Length: 154
Image (cartoon, rainbow, N blue to C red; front, top):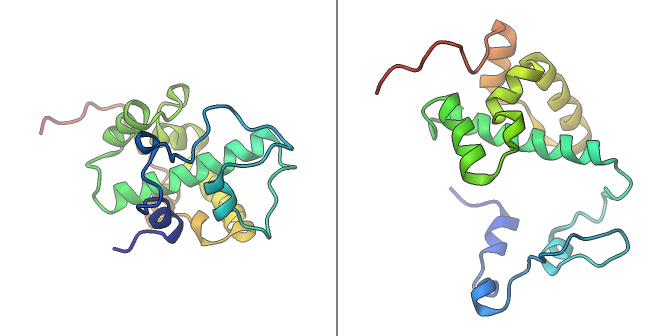
């Protein structure tokens, strides 16, 4: 599969990273009015301005986008089960532990609620927020991603 164009460009040899003194990430938080790092400027959509969004709106957009990717990982067999996905997200890439992982978070919110929010975001921002089939099935059936039963030994 071909990587998403912005991600492919971010990995170009012209961006070898911190070890070569050419990293694009800034360690200090950006504040309004301060310029963005070069990578953010390069891939920012000029037609959309998120500067007036509340913190809660920004968090929801990021969380829902993460959830979509986690769901595709489960749907496509990249991860064995939802529990593995939750552990990997929290321990491996810093998903907020108080949310329990993307699948526990879906269960907490309710799959039908997540579908509703994703459809609203999809209508406003495009297909990257389209709810995956596995989520639609769980919402229709009313089944959680994480059951209270112990996982069988592999």
